[in-house]
Length: 434
Image (cartoon, rainbow, N blue to C red):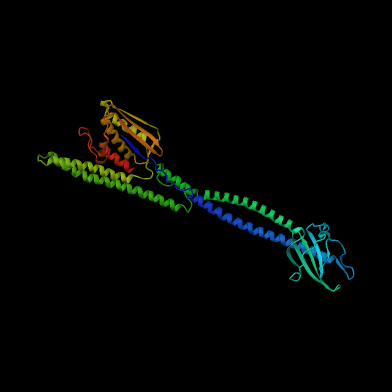
């Protein structure tokens, strides 16, 4: 006969995303990414604005230099007293140009314009103005313009100076790349610090998890050690629940024992009276009292086991129990020369009470010894997270159609054999409950 008993509760499989650690890290990384993106956008805009403003100021200063260097002759027209210091105004199509526009069009321009001109639409506003234009060869330029009225020549003239802003745009793009790289490195560092912070912050919860595993494995009976103020109430409540559970189990066992004592004594009196009687009802009373005793034993055993199943911390090693039971049964059957062989690895444990394991194995081994011809073999092996206990004997065996009946109802296989006939049924009940 084979009996499989679960020795370790299989951990429920939960989605990987259902992790407090991952949630905290993901939320922190998300907010960090948003903050860094906003910082990149703001810093990039500020730098670009500053570069453009600096470029416009340079254009304005250059234009003031053109105005200051210009001189006017009523017959010869305008000219420059001195060339501008920037050599790009002398290089053709260099991207830097200036010109002076009169009523009929340009009257003086830089050599860099060659035979081209700048757009000379009159500015809408007075004073120094800036706008973007398309210059010679289709290149985008930034234009500074100022309209002045010159009394000495009795006319209004438009002074213009344009410069290629490609260098400024390149500076802005380079700054954006460097800023992005710096913020990415900063973000990775912040995420690493967040991961470390979460690991350290959740360490007390991991300690509670290990402590609960130790309690379930039977290595401790309560949570030990000090925890942070936020976790300590949880640890205290768990210890309180463990103490309450132990108290409830003890009360249930006590009540089961008291009930068994209260029922068996009157039944024993009835059995004795019936045994001494001579009436035709005496045998019937004896049979019914015996059946009542068997059922009381069975159901009280089930009630006691049901109260004990799932108790945290319950644990016992299997091989020592088997060795002890085989020694006792070998002495009881030594006149038959019965051999009991125990085969199993040390360290296999049963997640339950030692008394329950002894009762299950004791019933099965006793049944096997009564029917065996000469050998009973017990094997203990690991199957996944379970321990499989197999008890075999070389007796006649039990037909399949009788196994369910015996385990469910507790039927005597042979009234010539000692016992109450409940051993297999009790073992099956206890294994099912566990």
